[in-house]
Length: 70
Image (cartoon, rainbow, N blue to C red; front, side, top):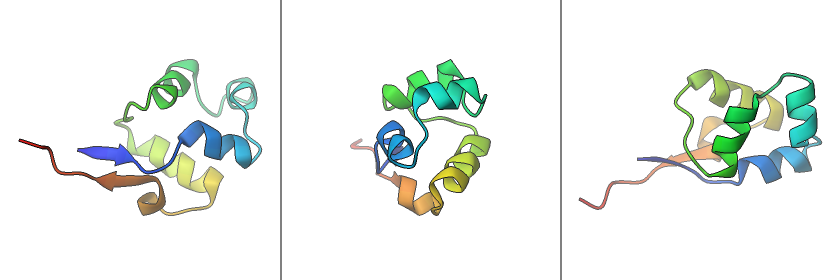
């Protein structure tokens, strides 16, 4: 399972991207913001690319693979 290593919204806020700014400037939609708020993984690679651009980081800084417990 892919999990986030960081709190996406807090990290974006620390970089100057409040949820208001993200919505107002149409960077992220409300549904995507809610998924980040609920720590749900986003399937689209486009969002991962956008996060890497905004946070100036690599995908491995944001997500990690954690084996299922089964």
